[in-house]
Image: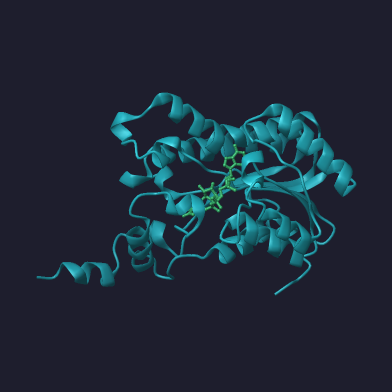
Length: 270
Ligand SMILES: NC(=O)c1ccc[n+]([C@@H]2O[C@H](COP(=O)([O-])OP(=O)(O)OC[C@H]3O[C@@H](n4cnc5c(N)ncnc54)[C@H](O)[C@@H]3O)[C@@H](O)[C@H]2O)c1
């Protein structure tokens, strides 16, 4: 359903790897809503080549950038303004990776080089994106920047490992940078805390299938899909949410406010 919510708006979308990616759905929805944008991902992710079909479908250009590299980000943001013909109205940071998770390292036995790498990719990159865009004066007033998070930032989900710490840091950056960016440029910054979703990053977490089923039964509305998450991102990029900033916004079918559901508790009756 298209309502021209982003008509005339220009954006940068990080993190569309394949059709399952949340960023992929956001790009499709942003296109439907009349936005123009640049797609970006780590150079290594480009090798899969899938992003080309998304670019074609949405009439977008692709600029590779490692989100941990200031040089790449400067190139991405300045070129995006050239290609799109002006300053940027919205940015989606849809990036996450933990080497400890990938390699099955337990939380109590972290390899700290891997921890630092995951922190840089998953959290600090969000600061780098905003610091670079601020220095380049790249954002329009009332622009909106969104990163994706997960409730493990607030509560323990053991197999989420050091990604939990990365998400806490990410959400804190949204608050702190949101303060400064709001005052200097009227730019808003938020994180959306999404339900578990079957994507490449998601399925890297141990026991993910069981976990997705558990979460489905613990959420009064059920798990939110990637497409539903994209709809929420569109709302956050639109002018209908102009005074929402420095928030972590749960998009989880009610999971975060539920202690237990009848369906789950009934499994424990003897
Ligand atoms: N899938 C879930 O269950 C879930 C739940 C809540 C939040 N999230 C978050 O949503 C976001 C998107 O993940 P997804 O589930 O769509 O999975 P995904 O694997 O499709 O996306 C992750 C993206 O991060 C990119 N990336 C990794 N390193 C990078 C780097 N150095 N520079 C630039 N990009 C890099 C990958 O190439 C990939 O496109 C992540 O922040 C993830 O933590 C996911």
